[in-house]
Image 1 (cartoon, rainbow, N blue to C red):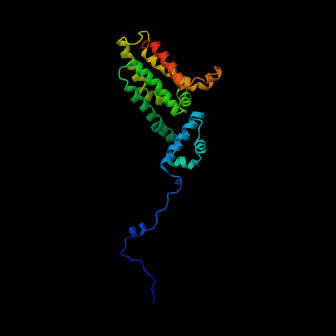
Image 2 (image 1 turned 135 degrees about the vertical axis):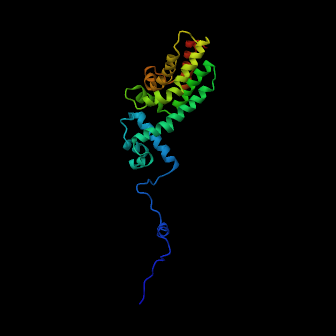
Length: 230
């Protein structure tokens, strides 16, 4: 009697299973690459700056990036995790670099002010979405980045600046009538507001001749002479 082939019983079942070709995980995007995550973060930032974080859907971000919503879910899970990734991988590193530049000015108040103004100019040039995002998500009530500003960014830059100005005032190196805390507010107002409002004031004053360098010179001169360090 002829008998069919019998599998070698001495081969462990686990070994026989591993010989099978592994299957690709269901739903895994085909366009998986190191650059894909960065592209998705960039697309998210553009959408957030355009209409706000609350009004932006994953589908809208996917359309901006030219991918499917499934790819966003693959990389980030849900919208909340995507927002946290934007903060951790885009906003924090951006302002961390600026903080290092400010620290290097040591005790020179004029150099500190100039470094701040130049730093904001550089950030806006590199990240044009920043002014709109700041207005929508920090200044507006209910903005998604207000807690980020208060809890994470404030100790790194605004509070550090106020402390530096306070020390300079005690040493009679800046105007005694100024409040160091409000001086920080003025710094932000004279840099971020002109950037956010540029489309408006350029039209009002027909001021296309005012470029970033001219705006920087004006702001530094105004601040230095106003606080008495020029």
